[in-house]
Image (cartoon, rainbow, N blue to C red):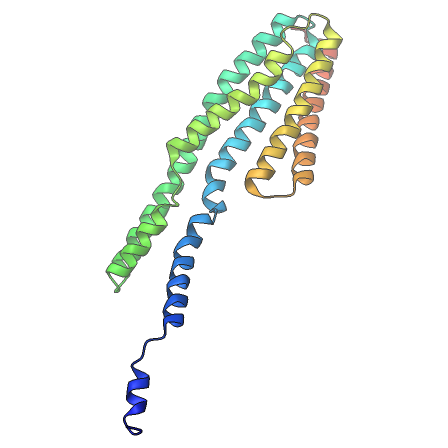
Amino acid sequence: MAAGAPNHVGTIPNPANGTTDQNKQTQVTDVPRNVVDYWQRAQWLRAAVLGANDGLVSVASLMMGVGAVNKDAKAMLLAGFAGLVAGACGMAIGEFVSVFTQYEVEVGQMKRDMIKSEQGERDLEMAMEKGKSIPNPMQAALASAFSFSIGGLVPLLSGSFVSVYKIRLLVIVVVVSLALVAFGSVGSLLGKTPMTRSCVRFMIGGWMAMAITFGLTKLLSAGGLEI
């Protein structure tokens, strides 16, 4: 009995170990569900944030530039609307071409890697997983156009209902500044980046664009060109 005892002891299952292993498997299975893929999120976040910022700054700067030489509210409104439509179309087309080129490059590289590989099924599974992170050209284009339009509507609507020239310019600058802070905050929250730095970057860039456009247009008008 003593000689055969070790064999019996070795075959007895340990419930504690089984429970621990099962819990480990459950934990390993549940972890990926709670992990946020910030790289994949950055693909559409970049297009959306850049589109909103471009729409806001471009339309506001265009309206400020026209307002530097023409005090008519209608002229500023028409210039802003034309800039909004042209900018949204340009952003969508540019983003589609850029991301589709990236898509073709990544797909081509995946196919070359699979052809050269000798591991077969394992590399196919890896390629399928990688394919989930490939950017979508149409998604990026629509996000850029939509966000550009949203950003461009802010200065367009804020300056459309103010008849007094100087107050109109002041309202556009104030509203655009607040929108820049809002866009910077949203981008930092979604991308998990420092909020203060993001807001400062947005505001400084927007102020510089409006000031440069206003100043150069005013200087050009001083040279004898009028609208």
